[in-house]
Amino acid sequence: MDAFTPQQTIELISRIGAKKSKMRIDKLWWNSVMAGPLLGFGCAITLSTNAAPWYQENAPGLIRTIAASFFPIGLITVVLTGADLYTSNVMFLPVALLHRRCSILDVGKSWFVSFFGNLAGMLFFMAIIVGYGGVFEAEVYKAESITFAIGKAVTPHWHQIFLKAIGANWLVCLAVFMAISSREIISKIVAIWWPITAFVSLGLDHVIANMFLVPIGIWNGAPISVGYYIWKSMIPALIGNTLGGAFFVGTVYWYLYLTGEGATHVDFGIGGQDTAIDEAGGPMGRAHAVTCKHCGSSSSNVGQLPDSSGRMKSGVGQELKPVVQDQGQHDRVDQV
Image (cartoon, rainbow, N blue to C red):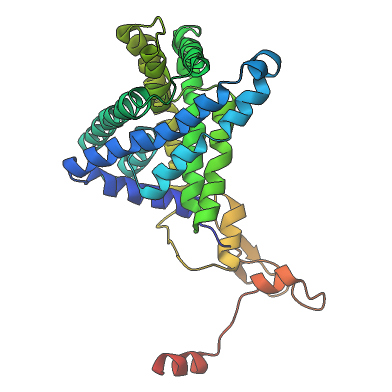
């Protein structure tokens, strides 16, 4: 299987979280600042595509889905450049903490620095690149930015933003999870694309994305104060995103795949039968004793599949069939 299994993926997430927890503060800060503009590019192109009055009036669902399909550009650049995004750190760090690879202080430090680094980077991108750069100078873009900001911060209730934020980061962290399970760049891009498109199409709330979408509306004249934005939009989205990523992805998959399962081996080669079993078998990989009814001997069935590569010549069966090497030949190869 040319992908890491779910168990191997959550193990890698734990290791990534442990590494992030020990990152130098200055590097963590600037890496977080860089994540803001990268995600901001996806926000800007989504808002630009949404500025389609005819579609907003006659086919609002269609134009929202079309605009959402461009938003993943932001998270793709974040993941592939290794930038620190608060909403993915809320998955990495709790898994490392539960795995006893970092402390609560490490988690708090990383979350604090990455959140405010993302905020600084996003506000820089919003004000300097988009605002003073005149990206949304045309009236149609200004009107859309104001409408969008009101729809994010004013129209929904506090609890609705909170609940939508849980769903948003559930999907964002699943996208990051699947990107880590992928071994090459095209698979990572595809793995990220669809969950992110889904969350934007549904109008869910992402606290870092809203750091662009609401302030740009305020910049263009939306009747929203900074204090109102912080209380009504930022705080519920922050709490919901944290819960969605830390619990519904990080904690759940840590429990399923890393508790009571023993050490997890991560093989960076392409696996065969054992990898295929792990891929489909799920986390509850307990051995079951198999007793021969003729001789009475027992054996474990973990990692074994029926041999389907006999007379039927099944291609899949041949691929999964264990390869038995001659020990003498193996020794001769090692000697060479």
